[in-house]
Length: 452
Ligand code: URA
Image 1: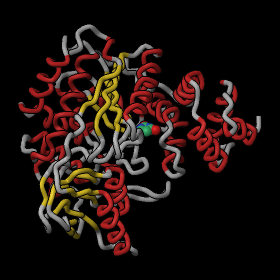
Image 2: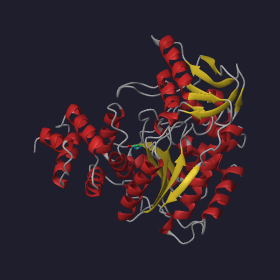
Image 3: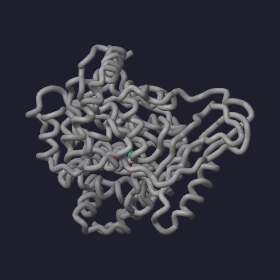
Image 4: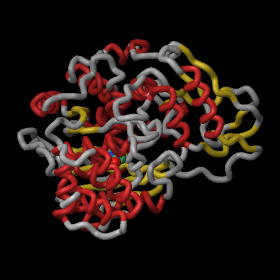
């Protein structure tokens, strides 16, 4: 089976057999199919789509490209959450600490930044000493000791996704429901979990800009997970503006610490609310509570009692000796050498944000990758002072831009980021007539009669 024939077949809109998908996935993972051919195939998939049968086969083949984790030696339920990716999306750190503090096991295998969206692993690596590259053995030790571990894909877990994810990031082939479903579900199903909560983003900063596309993706993933015997629900959540008030790796970690310390900023309210909601569903799907409402109460209790913060410190300590002092002294997190204000040039209201551009502005400053081999500047990013609906006066700062003036070309990158921000924010005379809800709907709710 020649890769070029399979590329042509998908290019022309035909359906692959399982054997053909296996040839592509296995050939690429083993290195016999080069990046350029796989890129062409991925683009054909993005443009032509895949049937449910093809998606199921792709997910299973990617899952079986490596090992799956056996967590049966750890007592109790295991649960995880995965987001399809957004801007300022940092709920993982908060909810992992909340849910593990309540006694569940959260074996979280995450990814790096993808396209304009940030990645959990990149954010974690802004904490001095934090090691996301644990072996399966080390990961098991962390899980047994504190109930939560946050790592990248080990060499053993879904290696096909690891390679494909990096290739999609730089070939404009992320936004395919089939590829996103297979990527997320192959990793998550390898974790040995009982239940999974999916945060499927929709809006200008999401890969699924339209709500109906997000619902379609959510249904695909819920169906795939349920077919594999897992309890899965998906929350369709808003990404029409960044979540919380920071965008950028270490800035986002700091915002999470503020929430867990109980001294969060009012503009972090949406982030805190969503973290509690996702935790509530994690409690609910594992039968730790009898209703989502009780799940919310449990999550609140973990936050307000300080137990989630204590758990976060424990995770930092266990994962390669991450510097736990950052929790009490956040100044120890990497910070940029310079800041400048992005200011409003008129009076009015923030009526809309092109959220993807905000993510791209942070990436342009060095907070994300443009090429597979790019390294990340953890300190750069944005601190927002205005959200949709807020009033602004001429000269008010809409956001503070954190940048470093070190690597060659920084002046151009800063100018470009400011230009992108200029295109991101709309200021109008009247406030927006309606604002999208933070949570649009839940898919997979019918799983249980108790859901409220
Ligand atoms: N997150 C993933 O893990 N994979 C995708 O394709 C998109 C978001």
